[in-house]
Length: 128
Image (tube, rainbow, N blue to C red; front, side, top):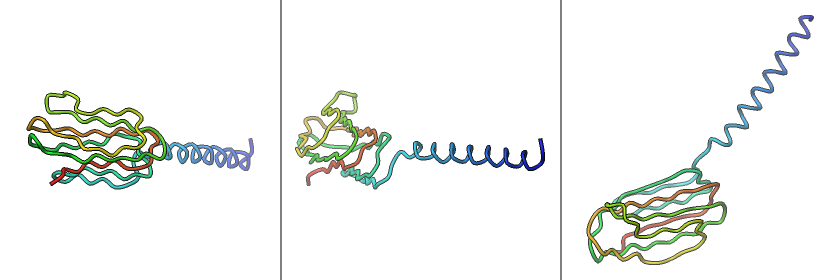
C-alpha cells in the first residue's frame, strides 16, 4: 500500500472514531436545567432530566408542602418518603399536578425525582 493510501486510511479511521465519540457524548448528558435545594425548598426546572435528583427536609407534624409539577416531555417518577422509608407520595410517569402534602409525623423526609428524557419542572415548597 502506498503512503497516500495509508494516510487516507488513517484519516478515515480518525473521522469514524471522532463521529463515534461525538455521537456518544449526546447520550452522556443527564441534566440541563436548575436545581435549588435549600432548607424547606426543593425545585427542579429542566430542559433535560435523565437522572435522579433527591433532597431531604426536616418537617414537623402539621407542616404542609406545596407540590407542583408539569412534565412536557419524557417520563418522571416522584417519591416522597418518611425517614423509615415509608412512602408518603408516589407518582409514576406524572404529567401535571398541584397539591398539598400534609405532614402527619415529625422527622426527615426524602424527596426523589427520577427522569427519563424529561423536560418540565417539579417543585416542593414548605408552606410557612
